[in-house]
Every structure is written in structure tokens, then in C-alpha cells.
Length: 584
Image 1 (cartoon, rainbow, N blue to C red):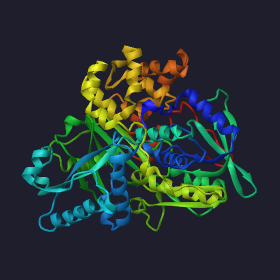
Image 2: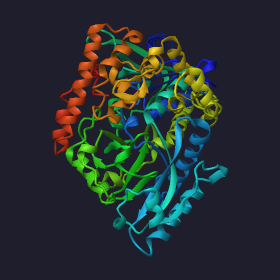
Image 3: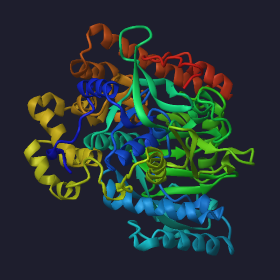
Image 4: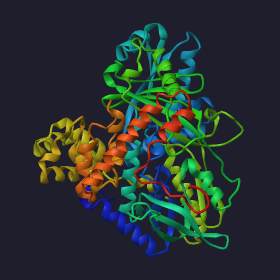
């Protein structure tokens, strides 16, 4: 399936049509939540032949699914916890995503594990990585990445000269994979829409429709309508799936399903620094007292993370404090020959992991496995898990839906369904120099576009052909072309400036100005496809600028409570409504 075969768009007209169709028919299933699990459920259900709707109160992937470490991995710490099943499952998924489902979005990435002890540590780590590599071959899968290798300190310093010589005795290098998490979710939703799913962001589930005990649908408020409360519609469905991550408990209480699933939020923050601040051709992984810390290659940048602390404050906008930032800097500086300072930090982002609560009081010890439950008839809840295993979670949730539908539903086939832009990607990559000549763009630009859009690159190049000014880079964020902002609005469901600068692109974390220097230009580019007048353009820029200022100020505070209070000082451009009963 390629762009030439009519890949679905998620533009303004398509959103309106989706909401209208949701109101006019009874669906087999409606999904609440537009993160990776909700998108996975929508795609799984649609490719089984079910009629599907999906609603998201904010932007797609605006929660946890855009704020991860951006890794597709088995998880070495879970191996150390002897959770072999979770690691094997994740590594099988890694191979599928790399080689079949999304080769344009998921790429191998190397990591160096510095050894700090002589004697026991090298055989201990080496044995673990032999097992890690072996689990990647389970059930006949090609693991899709090279195997690990042992390095002396001298050889390790050749590939990572930034390391402090006295900080380690040798190293082991292994491979995992990485992904732009928000882009992956949006691409999955476009794929689901291509198979018939009805998808709408800024459409909030504010209550449930009931017939006695049974849930028969969702009351949805369109937050983009001009009225103060938004237009409200009833979306009828034979089954409802709640895939709201860290908001799972609130939904569960809303329908009276007490005690089946308990989710605790764990905050993880990440720093982004320029690539030239750390001299290395490989990523780095190191132990901390609670977990592990990654230094991850990310284009012209490094991502450094993460922390793992309990979070009980605002779940929509978790804030990073000065304490969080200093923690990461202190730990990474323990192995770097030239220490990083706060002045080196371009971007900071914080996300919440939805962990299944258990006996442990420490979030770093809670489960990353998932659970599916039926708290009341007609409602399926899915929670826990990790980004890498979203497809398994989605399949289990739709199996539960199928059980409740009382009809014959085919098994999941998403292991055979490439995402939008995957088919034809390798051939286009091989032809990138020809594409550069025919488009007039430098081959480096073509490579950038192919690794973001795959075989849908033609749609972006068509915009540039119609308006050559869109082939210029954004002023102040020259990694991205002006066409990418327009495309975000016309094809990728970006409804507001923040959507385009934070999730469709990563300008908000990849520039020292955090996107404020390109806000006016980007808003003007979005104005035509979204029908904004001059007043709305001004409003979009003001709201985005206030958000950047509030985030910067929150990162100067010492405690979570202080950081949260300041971050909440920046209002949302589309406020989320209070639902019937409790907040969703």
C-alpha cells in the first residue's frame, strides 16, 4: 500500500466527515484515546473488518506516546529482572517493526555499555547480551540488528572519545532500534483510516451511553466548535475500548468498575543537547542506582534520559524540575570527559509511564506488562505495557472486543500490515539521488523526507511543485522544510501550532528557542489549510509562546509541586471540558 493507492488524509474535512459518520451509525467498536495503544486498537479492529471510531480529547499522541525515550527495545533491565517473556515478546516486535511494518520509521541504533568493574562484570554483561541477541531470534525471526561485540577501553574510546578514560575499564556494544514515537502513532492512525476507521482529535469522551448495566457508546464533545461547551453528540457502539493510559483509573471509576485495574503514573524526563557536545558515533547506556540512563543519537542531537519517579500532579502536562535536570546531568557527566552544563540543553520533555500498580512502592519496580479487563458489559479496558509491544496489547484488546460482539471475528493480522509509507520505501531510498535531481532538493533533504514519510514523500513533493516557496527551510529550524508544516495541517491531523511544532515536527525540543523563533512563520503556513484569519494566527502564536515560557520557568523550580504550578499557568488553546461525573 503506497501513497499512490490513496492513503487516507487526516485533514480538517476528513475530521468533520468522521465525526458526522460516527454520529449517524452504530459502530462495532469506538476507541477512547489516540496514543499508541488506542491507535493500535483502531488499526487492529479495522483490519479485522470491524467498523471503528476513535476519539482523542487533545492531539494524537499528545500524552505518553510523544514523550518516550523513542526506543524500540526489549529492555535490558527487564532481562536482569528475569522477565524473559516480556523481553522475548518485545524483541520479536522490534524485528517486525524494523523489517516489515515500519522500516521507514524504525531504525537500528548502537549502544555502548561502559564496564566499570574488572573480573566479574564483562562475563555477566556479556552473558546477558548473548541471551538478549538469542531472544531476538526466537520463533525464527531475523532480529534485524547486528549482534553485540566486546571492546577494550582503547577501542571503545575510538568510537566514543567523549568518554572519560578513568570512568570505565572496557565496554560492550549492542544494538536496539529507535523511532519518532509521535510520528509513528500518527502514521498508524492514517493507516487505520485507510482501512475505514473514523478518527478525530480534539473530540473528548465526556460520558458513557448506558442501557442498564451495559455500555452502549460514548458521549463526545467536539472541542473545536465555537460554543463554550462544544457540540455534543452520542456515538453508539457495540463495544467501547478505553485506551487512555495514565487516565485509566478515572475512566474505570466513571463507569463503576472498581478495582479491576490500577495504574500509577511514573514521570520520566529527557534532555536534548546538540550532537557536537558529545563526541561519539554510538549511543551510550549506563547503570544508575534505580535503573539505566541512555544517551541516544537523534539526528543532529542527543537525547539523554530518563528519570523514574512517582507523579501525582497534572497528568496532561507533567513538568520537569531543576532537580530532574540536574539528576540527568550529574549522572551523564560521571562518564564524560567534557561535562555538560544547563547551557548545553536545547530541549527538555517530560512524560508519564502508565505502570500497573503492584506490591512495590517504587515506580521503577512496577510492571511494564499489560492487562485487559471487562469492568462492565460493553466496555474493554487495556492498560500497562510499553511502546514496543503496543501491537500485542491492541490484539489482546480486540480479542476481548470480539468476545463481546458475539459474532465471528477474524484473528489479528497486523503483523502482516505495513504502515502508511512502508511499502516501496526501500526502492525509493535506493532512488534518492534520482529523486533529488527531479525535485531540485539536495539528497540530504530527500533522505530526511524519506525517513519521515516513506513512500508518501510524493505528497510532500507535490506541495513543493505547486508552490516552490515551500521547498525552503523554516527560518530558525532549517532541518525542516516549510512544506512539512503545511502537510502536517492538510494530511496529518495537526489542528494547532503546538501540534505541528511539538509532534509533527520536533522543533520544540530540537532548538534552543524551543520553537518560538519559527512560531509566526509556521502559523502563517497553517492558516490557509485550516481557515485561520489574522486574529487566529496571532492567538496561536501567543498561546505557543506562553507555553514555551511556562515550561522554561517550570524547569527552574526545585520541586515537582512548584514546577507543576508554573507549567499550569499557560492555558491550553483548546481547553478540555469537564465530563459527566469526573474528569476523563
